[in-house]
Image 1 (cartoon, rainbow, N blue to C red):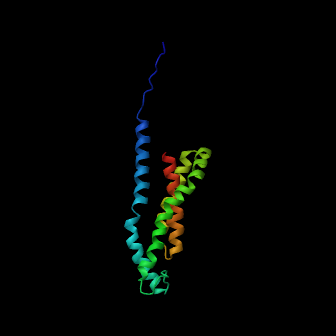
Image 2 (image 1 turned 30 degrees about the vertical axis):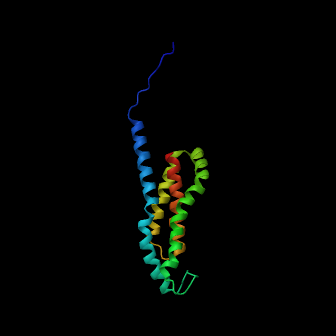
Image 3 (image 1 turned 60 degrees about the vertical axis):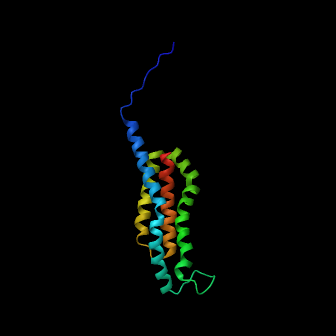
Length: 147
């Protein structure tokens, strides 16, 4: 007859479950809420690019600058989750090598600093490097560690 020893949970599993839920909530909300930023970014960079006489639309001169810049801003929001997917194998390796605490701390730092630096951007390339790359890598580190 097998004797069953029952492990007693002291509540630590609930802490880990709550932390994982909060990571999923923050990361999913961040990536899913780019549509809120989209309109404001188009307004901001359409006036900036029209004042610099830069028109990204090559279809016609009758197309407003805002519609020409809209696909560029949409690429910023698209490349963020793409960076997360591209970085996932590297993050998995780092997770196994250094442990979840260091990877999660680094990802949180990258994501927070990406948001702070995004608020100071003046050009589209800065938006790509801060929002798409820095937040995307931080998102990958947080999301992969939560699984």
